[in-house]
Image (cartoon, rainbow, N blue to C red):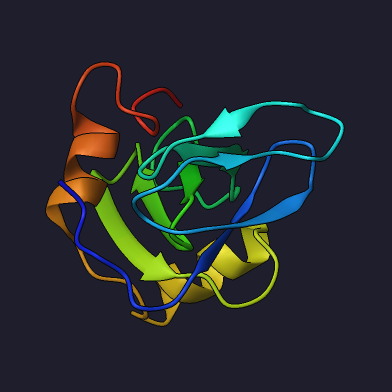
Length: 124
């Protein structure tokens, strides 16, 4: 179970709408997607190739923004995972800044998101 949070969080829905929520309660989306998020849900996933020549496939990365403002990512070609707190927009550039400048750390969540079948970052 997620821990208790002292301050409310916000969740960015797939439609781009940001809704206030806390880690315990459900936050209804009042934006165009008309969905509801539970704490621990993923909000948005991006997939990209950096073009770096680590393998014949380049460097394929999948990153997911979670509703608690944390991003997990998985580098499919190098087998590296990490997690960092998002500051600013959720973009390929932000993910690569965190990755390249060691602003992320491997966590149980980033490992399971990338390595376990069905994890939100497991597919390139």
